[in-house]
Image (cartoon, rainbow, N blue to C red; front, side):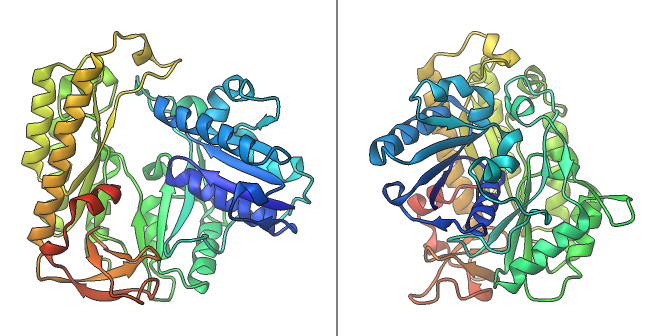
Length: 412
């Protein structure tokens, strides 16, 4: 069977698609590059925003037109949240929830292996994403994720270690640990005891070889002094924290039902900076939350600039049916667009400042197959022609390499 796949959304989704590729191609399936070639077209969906839903529907229609004879499968968070919306597109669309993902190979008629699920390569990438945690029960008023991924799960410690070793054995030199709530990892050891993320990292850095580990995203309350101290003294953990902020105003954070205020966020950034002045710190920031006033937004912008973060992922509030925030009166779309533009410009300023701060320094960078290379603290550096995918090496940082379009593309 010839299989084509496409992934929307987060690193967890990307890992799960890769895992399905492994299981399907390992059962005599053949991966192909276009939907026109396929017998089975697999779309792994995201549903964090209405935009993600809309893009998924567009892709489904495109695939249906491109290949009228193929089975068209949609799974993921949109498929879990609103399966009927996807089925309404065409009676050819088959929909499977997140909870049914592990059973997809058997649904397609493939023999299911009894071995532990894992990957040993990551198609088309120099660095590999490795999912070690799933599920979230946070009470955030705007977020649909606890509805579509409610079950808390952590990958057993030995299985994490085995996957890391398999990926290293195939030449990957950066492993990105990812999860829906990565900082809540509680993996079982062979004897049945559980360990947290920090103690897992201590075990992984003992694995022989030249490689580095990147943490995909941690909530601010998970960036503990002990974790900061360990990252600061390790030569295998990337000096980069992505810490969702959502708002730089404490009143808006309370309205969102986030569990911290901006003072705590500022204090954690300060702790990271004191331990590692060269550490990259990036953040998710939402604009246009229904209760956000102009004054609160302006305070958010001021606080972000004062903290000197190294970059932002800016996104607009999107009402998700079933969440408390969906019941609130939305802001004028023109206001939301204006605020997103302001923070988008601030993102450019912050990234350029961070680059200039490190101008002339040498850092270890990993070239991507795209021709870009990334340092451990998430600075883009140039890769000479012919060196893409050549592995970790020390490279000099030049602020002149900052390119607004390139950095915009590379936002975390």
